[in-house]
Image (cartoon, rainbow, N blue to C red; front, side):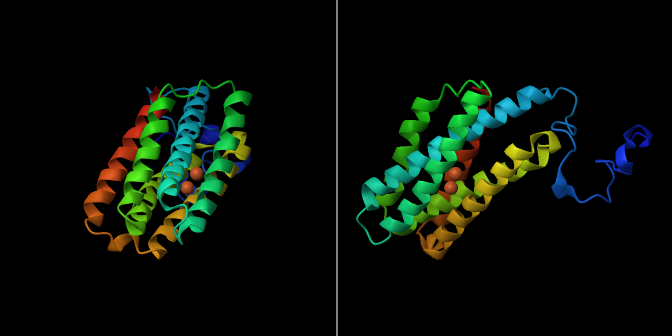
Amino acid sequence: MGGTGFLAKDGMSSTDPKQPKQTGPKTTGDDRLPGDPDRETLVERMIRVDHAGEFGAARIYEGQLAVLGRHPVGDTIRHMAEQEKKHLAAFDELIVERHVRPTLLSPVWHAAGFALGAATAAMGERAAMACTVAVEDVIQEHYAHQSEQLGDDEVELRELIDEFRAEEIEHKETGLAHNAEATPGYRVMSEFIKTGTRAAIWLSTRI
Ligand SMILES: [Fe+2]
Ligand SMILES: [Fe+2]
């Protein structure tokens, strides 16, 4: 551990263990390790992967609606789909504003998202909800991690991510309230989808 003398701004230090962690670094990328991307690349990657993720999420819910749209649970899914569209629209804007290259994998997420949503919905309402719980759990963790990395120089982006994260948590809770965990083979299915979602995040951050 280095000294704290050079971090004397307002007597605050982001490395002070007594400081609550949720406020994040004072500047984005403060907590970068040697070899990590620079601040600009870090934010660019965040916008790229979040744009891809919201696109994938919107496609998952579209796939679910293609199967369950007229089912009693249809309106619940439609509400979540609407929120995903709002999330996607915000990142669509950010991609343009910040001149971020979108992921090259969009055609993959277009197909894979829809297929995942439709296939789980074809297994029934609970399986569709199990998919929602698995995906949203990974996404909310991903957003929490990003929020921690963003500093006071990116307050707007951090607040947007915090707001969307709260809605992803709502989606997860909606899934749980619809008996997602009662799906036959829930654990295996959930792990499978979570692994796929993490892989999609990893790829869309970089490609
Ligand atoms: Fe979302
Ligand atoms: Fe969501």
